[in-house]
Length: 146
Image 1 (spheres, rainbow, N blue to C red):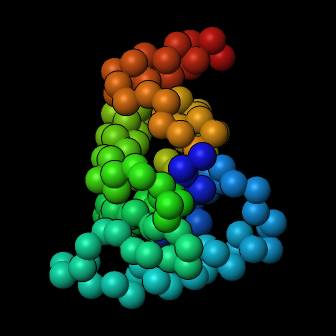
Image 2: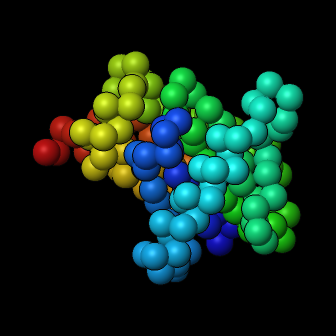
């Protein structure tokens, strides 16, 4: 399992999405979220890269408007960090098409759909599907069922 967790935080540090692929106690999750936000929000996004070493892991993040999308993966992972950066971009593109210009309120009020998107994209900490069209077709099919 390469991906430990995926987070979406706003500028104030409010959690909008969290998907945990590693077994971490709830109290430790809250501490991790605070530490991650403090680390990422204090960085100069114009001059520093989107990759940060965090404890014994790597954080890969990208900022879209007021939200930080963050993936945490193993430091020992041989996976390319740029591929995780592209996964974040793919996730945002899918959400943008699915919600027709996604915003932070879509993440708050349609959280169950966000998790459907994440389950189609990432399973058990591993990337499963990279085709935006295929994922969107599956999501529309699931919408038609309900």
